[in-house]
Length: 229
Image (cartoon, rainbow, N blue to C red; front, side):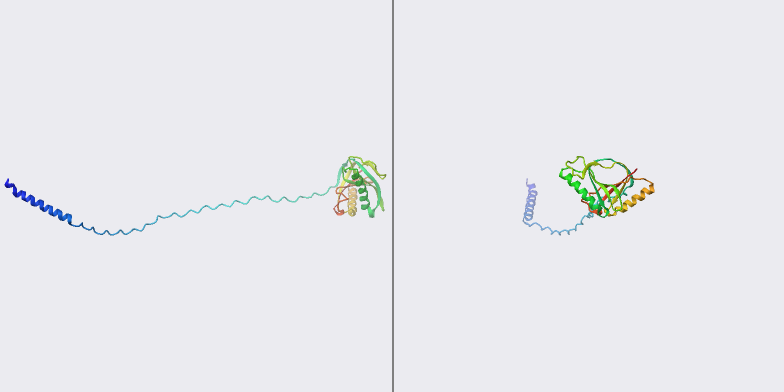
């Protein structure tokens, strides 16, 4: 037993020394770790930005196709010497005579009288005012003023009667302008008849396309009919 004492003492001493060392270790302040040097921040390289694609500009709409203006209407020449066939119509008729110097005034007075007669009885004309020349000489002429009607008026004055407008084959001519210039139209008609070697009856018919009672004289449009033999 004694032989183990030295080893025991040695062990005790070793433990004691170990305890002292441990105590010293426990009492010693922990070593201060060296201050860490902050890392130098690495600048961030921005990611490359793709260039913005511009929005496609709106393509302007093509201008709407414009319809070209219609060409002006071409006025065809008035018929001159056109062959036609006149149809008889019932008409109120006033017989009269006139001098060439006051021809238009006399004719319009006769037409006014007939128009007033129809208006008084509420009868409407069924055709244009007409003048039929029955004879002519150097001083003047005789005529029939006529207004076509579908209904015959009653209680006619002595100088007014019911009759028929001319009928049969005729040549048609057109006069535009004042009554005073009718001489030029009739001269052209006479030349046309001579050139064509046509023989006309001794009468002429004026069919007033414009109302001679309301239209300015220089705006008159008159169809002239020349009955043929």
